[in-house]
Length: 103
Image (cartoon, helix red, strand yellow):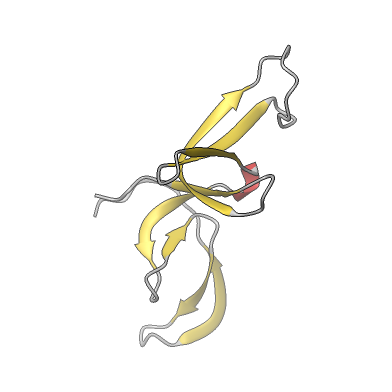
């Protein structure tokens, strides 16, 4: 079974954070750095027990797949297309996550 996890780029440090994704809607009476829609987006890292405010457009879900170097592939990643012989074609593909896969 595929591991469910997300990544997002931190608002304050610009680093990529990996873990659980959650949203928190800020009450209108709180003064906080909420986004325009009043929602903050967090990645909770299991390894460090820390929560990081992340940029919403950078959030991507782990696809359960890895590239030829063993790195995890996330929604939104850019990958180079390979032909049937494993040679690069020169085409760049963006990974889109559209559902669940059963492994």
